[in-house]
Image (cartoon, rainbow, N blue to C red; front, side, top):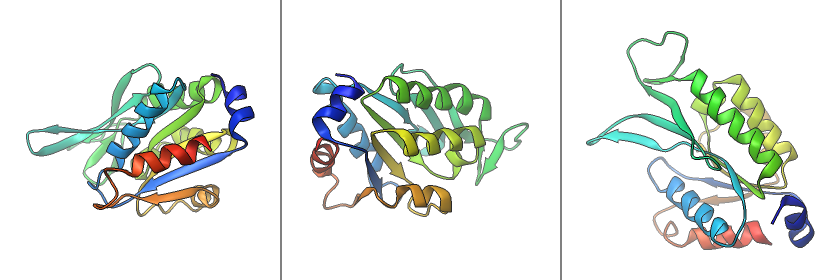
Length: 187
């Protein structure tokens, strides 16, 4: 199924947003929705930025292209940030973000039925090229599932997300919320 088929069968533009406190399971819900979309034959593109842990310590975040599986570093712990940007205690790996993240969103806008972005937050938005790609995706794509940082403060992106269907992941809904989101994306 391509985007034209999806549009004919499902109507117009729809953005679905997942939010919630850190560690509540937003990425898990996102991954379940992506898996279900793929299982019914839809092409899902975009990015996911899972945390990387060594033992009990988080050392950073990867950035992964949902279509190709290509991955690199979004950000990682570092004392020195040479050409990277610091967000909290993490250094954003600008080259990987551009090479993988920007390319993944551009490719998804061309070829995917549904685009996933996990997540829209301070690290992702600190790289102007990825911020621009996220804005373009939210502005021009038919179906988007986005995980949004709970305290997002980018006014322009907040404005783009105003018409979105919003779901807050919490302890009572995180095991079943993916079904509701799947239905919202497909209707």
